Image (cartoon, rainbow, N blue to C red; front, top):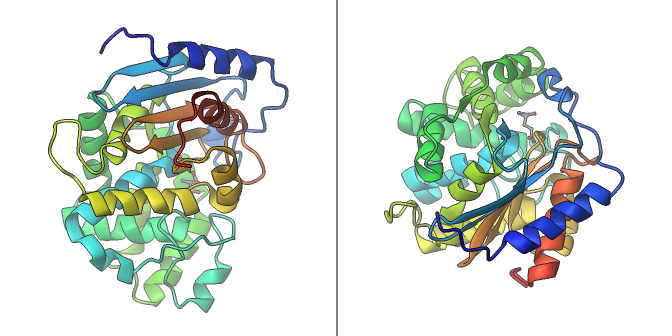
Length: 307
Ligand code: GLU
């Protein structure tokens, strides 16, 4: 890591602005283990393509990655089976809440996109079939890309999700009835809850997202995705990555991004850098209030957006 201060002043300015801004939203309470998080926590990291990382606030504090994990399982599955995945999940915004069941019946058990829960369940199911260990494959990838061998599943959060996972179970069984799930649903749910319960910091996640800014190339120089696939994942993040507020996120931030109900948000400046902001207070769509504001300020202050 270099000590060059390139992004440090802008991060410090953003942290000061966030500290003065009122209204942080509320932590997710439908997963009880997340409800206790303090909405005043805030951290942000920027990783350059060579692995240089800058950070501010709680940027080294691990948090629950939740739906951010769906970007990595999507990329890992595409690396294994390429376009065959797209016969089982679409790539259009859903316009519905992330855990909605209604659209699935109209659309014969094919979820709209890989980032709503139904679509993420399909991706995890397929990755599990490809690898025999979806959550382990995810963890290995995150550890390698972040350089942090300590990354792990928080078993309390995974247990809390399982204990309150009726809606995800319903999605899994419903899609199984359409033949769109290959593994036993309880096995799939266990993998999915473990995946969502991986804890990582802003620094870890900014680094792990780097392959999307490097057009598919991993930290060690090997290729995970083709350039075309990396473009496609970025595009799906831009259009579907922030629940049914993806239009607002694109409008404010102007980058491919993915949020999770743990309060993290990752974003990609293709060819330049990757970002992760974290603050546990969420808006009504499930996006981190301070996290999205921080990314908005970053692209506004630096001019680094895809537009
Ligand atoms: N594990 C969460 C769920 O399935 C993920 C939600 C999210 O971050 O969007 O409900």
